[in-house]
Image (tube, rainbow, N blue to C red):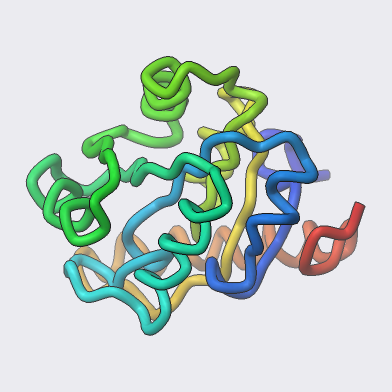
Length: 174
């Protein structure tokens, strides 16, 4: 049996598949998005195709958006500067502190935050601990730094995903 802390509220193949209307209709006011393997390629500041446009659409809908990442403060800041949005680096997810800090800074409840990321044991666990809406995306690519560490984590996460997929499908399925 899978622990509730690892079960995302929603699954999407890509951050680009998540629409503002779906978030707004669920009471979301702040979108907290992970960087690596969600908005940018692993350990880079190179955005996936369409990421900048997606951020503009989210902001244009009236939603607030911020990067909440385990990346270094410097790299997280460089990512967010390209998007002109606030950033929270070195969040040490699965600690919920980065999400809680972002919610406080934007003046919203953690239940009004959607945390979007590709890792169950960091992004989703942090969101669930914070009481935020958790949205898991598929990873963009295999990690290039600390490959063996991430290979073991991804193997464990694949088992978790098999269990999650027995419970829910992709998209806003509620």
